[in-house]
Amino acid sequence: MAFNENRIVSNYAQALYEVSKDQTAKVLSELQTIELVFEQNKKLAPTLDDVSVPSVQQEVFIQTLSKGTSHVTQNLLETLADNRHFSLLEEIVNQLERLVNVSENQSLVLATTAVSLTKSQVDKLSRIAQAKFNYEHVEIKNIIDPAIIGGVILTAGSKTIDGSIKNKLTQLNNQIKAAAGKEQ
Image (cartoon, rainbow, N blue to C red):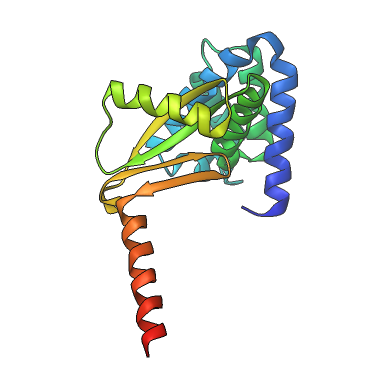
């Protein structure tokens, strides 16, 4: 994402955070639900951002999408439509989530594993992540990636703990190559 887009995303998220105040959790939840609609329809955001799409069609879509949501969420959708910024929605939601997590000293931790985690494994990883990343509250989101072979990669913001088998094999391979190079 370009620097200018990062600033726009940050501005939207910060404004949302400040405007929503005591209903931030509700607004975040609404936006996460709306974001799912865009994830399931990858062409939706680019279509809505297209200047050739009449404003009337955008308004009808926004009315349908925002039915039953807070005024803050409705206003954001209208602003995104006016500025043709629907393609930034996912990043805006992510940034808002980070702001909420920081204010509540909690974090979303991505746990990348080769297979799905059980509830007891998620609970154990949550306790480990709290200690390792120094958060009071941690929410674990499990991402499945068979390429890591086994183990787990924990990611919280810019911090990563890579305990995957793939990483250990890569390190071992590098050590063998380094040792073989010294013998020659």
